Length: 160
Length: 203
Image (cartoon, chains in turn cyan, yellow):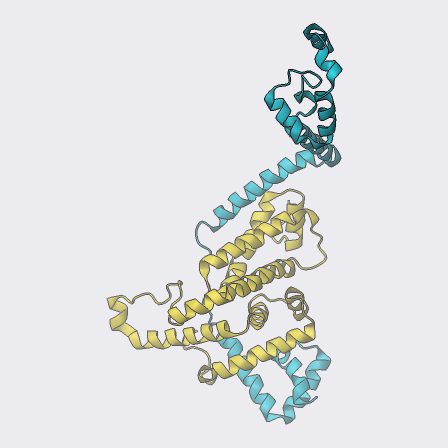
C-alpha cells in the first residue's frame, strides 16, 4: 500500500473500523511511512477535538409543537381515509359536481329568445342574438320575412 | 407489550400499525441527535429545530410504507441530511451576508453571554482560552463544505457505518472515504494550534 491508497484507510484505522486484512496492510505501510504515521496521530487529535463540540438540548416546546403537527396530520389523513375505500366513486362525484357547476354557469342561449319568431322582439334579445353569430343569418331572414309580419297578433301568441 | 429494549425497527413497525406511543418513544430516542446534527449543519438553533420537526413529520407521514430493509437511524439521518443540505444550499447567500455583518462565533446561541462578576474575578483567563478553543473547533467544522461537514458529523456522532453514511449522502463508500479524508486534512491544518496540545484539561 502506498500513501495515496492509505488515504482511504487512514480514518478507518484511526477509529478502528478496518477489517483484519485492511488493518494488516495499513499497519505494514505505517511501519515504514513517517508522514502517514504523523497523519494518524493528528487525525486522532482532530477526532478528540470534535468530541468537544458543544451539544444543544431541544427547547421546551419541541415535543408539544411536533405532537400538534402530528395531530393535524392524523386528522387530515383520517379525512382522506374516509374517501380512500372508494376513490373512483369520489372521482366520479367530483366530476359530476364540476359538470353541474359548468352547465349552471353557461349562458342560457336556448331559453333566451322567447320571441324568437315574433315581431315584438325586445331590444336586449336582439342584442343577444346579434352576438350569436351562427344564427345571425336566420335572424336576418326571419326579421324580414313579410308573411310573418302580416299575421294577426292572436296567431303570433299561439305560435309562441 | 415489548420489553424495555425494543429496537427502532420494532417501534417503527408499531407506529405503522397505528401506535402513537411508539412514535413518541422514537422521538424521545432520536430528537437530540437529530437536532444536534442539524444544528451543526445549519448553525442556527431555531432553524435546526424547524428542520428536525420536518424530519419527524416526514417519518410519520411515511410510516404506512415503512419496510425494515435498512436501519431506522440510516433512514432517519438520510431524511435529515437531505433537508440539511437543501437548507444550507438555499440559505448560503443569506448566511454569507450574516457572517460579514456578525463577527464569527457570535451566533444566536448565547454562548458568548456576558460573564458575571464572580466568574470574571475567578478565572477569566482560563475561560477565555476555553472559549477561544471551542470557537476555533466549531468554526473549523462550520467552514467545511457542506457535504464534507455532513460526512464528518454522521461519522463522528451518529455511529453510522461507512455504508450507511454513504447512503445518507447518496455517494459511494469510496467517495465517502475521500470526503472524510479531505475533511480531516482540512481540520488538521485549521486546528494545527490545538492538534499538538492534546485533550482539554479536565475533560
